[in-house]
Length: 136
Image 1 (cartoon, rainbow, N blue to C red):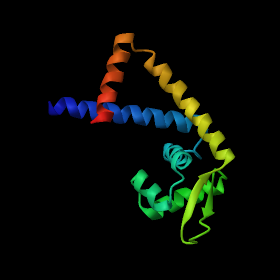
Image 2: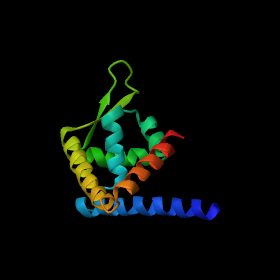
Image 3: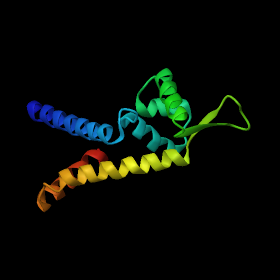
Image 4: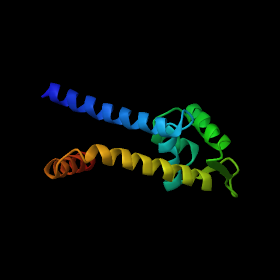
């Protein structure tokens, strides 16, 4: 049983790495999967820096470097809270939304090409298994 679980984890990580490498190849060295995930989270939640660091499981100083790079690339902007200047929200820019959508489409095409290699039964099994893992 332990060997099977280790194999599953290994395959999941390999799949993730392949997807990351594809994203990097399509968008150059300047846009990583971490930046993609960050933009997605900012678009959906408009988080505070601490929330973003927690979501990404990185330290606040690492989150600051990441945000600084995204701000320099004009993919996000910082918005000061009008009631409490210590609070800074992060919002995605129009350019950031366009870059995020472009990457999302590329990842979807990349995964679609891989998943089409599975037959209908295998696709249904994968949906069932992934759904169960998400619900656990």
